[in-house]
Image 1 (cartoon, chains in turn orange, cyan):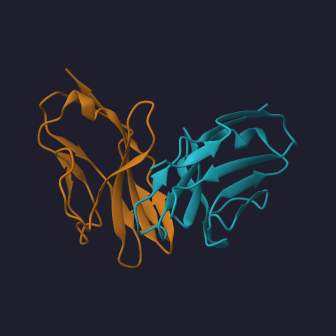
Image 2 (cartoon, chains in turn blue, orange):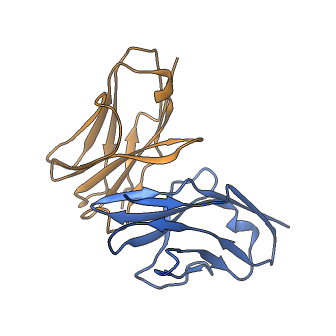
Length: 107
Length: 113
């Protein structure tokens, strides 16, 4: 079965601090993993996907198959990063989301 | 280009009624997926349609159904509404399915009283 676990409901940091949003998954095949973000009053949108290996808005995420993790990281958080972040996995034409982590960046 | 459009934005229904929600995908997108979002459960997959065929279905009762038309527009229907069906229903479209970027609508907020 496909499952995505985001252990933290809320992560609160100060501006300029490093951020790591945790994501673990279970999937029997080769997964494709994504991070989606929802800013206040905006639609859910793709932040990044593991196959592109890009850095978007300073965020990166590395797929660790041994630990079945896909943690999202940013070295220096900004106030505009405050949002709801969802880790998601795709397999068998189904996009499965974690329960999300709210990131709050304080000045 | 126009984004994913969901109508209506808000709905209030009473228990036992049925409801139909609509989703217009981005032009050229053939895959439409539906999700139920609640504070306690997060985003839960309902079903996915591609070229008018349901390709995948989540773990929801048969009261939840959907369809897709030849122009890729999709509808979902919930019959015999229950209080627990109150949620934000999100639609997402993509070119070919889950392996491509999903673009989400703003959702329909359904309240069952």
